[in-house]
Amino acid sequence: MQDFSLQGKVYLGERLSTGKPGKMHWVNDVGLLNITANVSSENRQESYSGQRLTSATLNTGTEVSFSLTLYHATASNLAMGLYGTERTVTSSTVTDEAIPEVEAGDSVILDRGNISSLVITDSNGTPATLVDGTNYQVTSSPGGVLEFLDVTSFTQPFNADYSHGASTDITMFTESPPVRYLMLDGVNTVDGSGERVRGRLYKCKFNPVSQLDLINSSFGELALTGTALFDALSDPDEALGGFGRIELLG
View 1 (cartoon, one colour):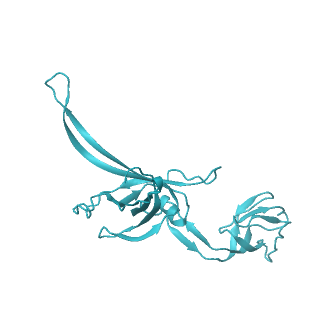
View 2 (cartoon, one colour):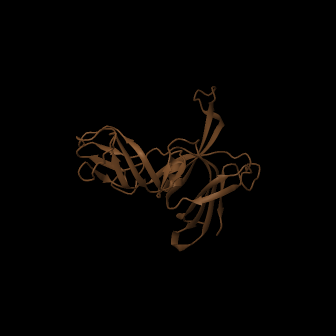
View 3 (cartoon, one colour):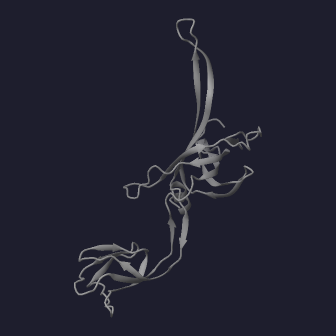
């Protein structure tokens, strides 16, 4: 491979206790994958010439880091960037969800989104039912947002009964820093050569996403960084190396 510009699919997955890759998944469209290597060293200067020339160097460490920019905010990608957990919530119903005391013009957010069949009652001994469009309005069914219009004749607090749709919830910072096995199934796009390349990093420890734009005027992305850890299981094998390898497949 001479001139090169690679594209391809990036897979992330488990690293088994044997050092081999376990279950892998394609992270979808990736805009950037790069590797940065840095060797730190300590220098010694001689003290007899009067010029303090470097007479010896001592390598004190080798660090391999990576950057990975994901274009798709899938649940697994978000969970990885946010050190989170995926939780599947099935569609269901909610009964007697308490609503804080409100005045006309106040908005509240229900516990779940994608709501339907909403009924709001007050706390009277014989509960009265609020009228949609008169006493309140649903500002956003997907967001579970309500605005109250006229509450003067009711006994607060209010209670809400409703149905909600299914969702996938991603928690934030509830898991340890994720470590993944990474593999690039790449192709050289220069002059249509079609040369194939595989790139691997055995132990990728991800940093949390430094910035996640929830509202912006352009395409969103997940810009991830991390450190490729030294893999003591792979290092003794000269065909593997301690961090990863690149395979030129032709």
